[in-house]
Amino acid sequence: MIKSIITMPINTSPGINRSLVWSVGLYIILVFNFLEPFAITVRSFIPEYHLMLSTYGIISSLAMAIFVYFIHPQVTKYWLKSSKINAIVWFFIAAMFISLVNWIYSVILHDLLNGWHNMYVMDKRFMVLMPKFLILYGLWALIALINLFVINQYKPENSTAHLDLEETLTLHSENQSDKLKVSSLQLVCFKTCDNYLEVYYLDELKKLNNRLIRSSMKKIEQQLNENQFYRCHQSYLVNLAYVKGLKKSKNSHFLEMAYMDFDVNISRKNLKKVKTFLMG
Image 1 (tube, rainbow, N blue to C red):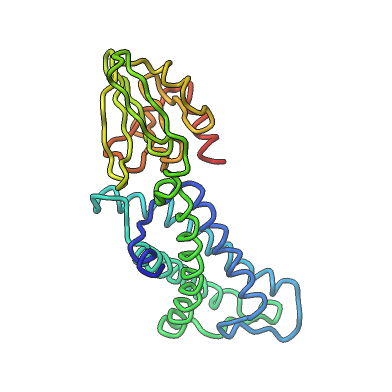
Image 2: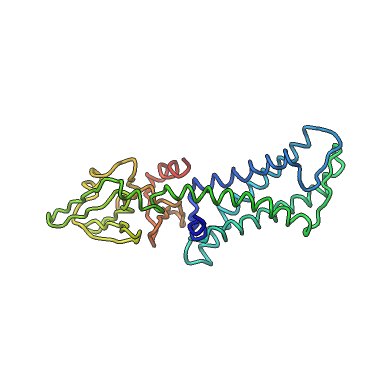
């Protein structure tokens, strides 16, 4: 299990992003209100005090949102060849960033809030607060990392056990001697190519393969589960299990797919449905 966590890559999907954002905020609100760390003191119980402590949760969620929605995509786009980052490294960087944001927020509170309603933020020194924040967010990162590992254990992209349980499909070609037998969970994407379809699928080792079969997209759609596969463009049919996110380039939108080295076009009429799916 430990080895799996260490080597598990981070592919931040919309669902994972949202859970990380709200979980860090909830975690900090509970810790700060019940444990009252960092020498934040009050001379009497007042609602404003706990409201002030809860703002650390809001700041933490905002910092996490900035990290997963802006910093991480930019780093992987311009400095890394792959968006897959070692999970421990990813969470360490995230904990460092959120800790830094919280230290800055503590400095602001120390300078502006002390004495208001008898509330005090006793310290603002970097070398005093940062280690404490790192320990606090390091514990959250450990919990989130283990949770992410458990989730990934049950995702088609990370488990071959499901492939054995899934019914095998036979994709028929107009050339009767040409057939492709695969599990629906192995299918990643279909792309039209003149009178052929290019099928992108995973083998037993989860390596991406592609193959041409002489068939139409309409015939293939009839064989597949409409809740699992979605035709986002006239030329593309995708397995929703492998959709990582949405990209925009000028006036065009694309789907980022796991395992594939190119993005999939989205037609304008399907853009709203795709966004609804990703937000859900």
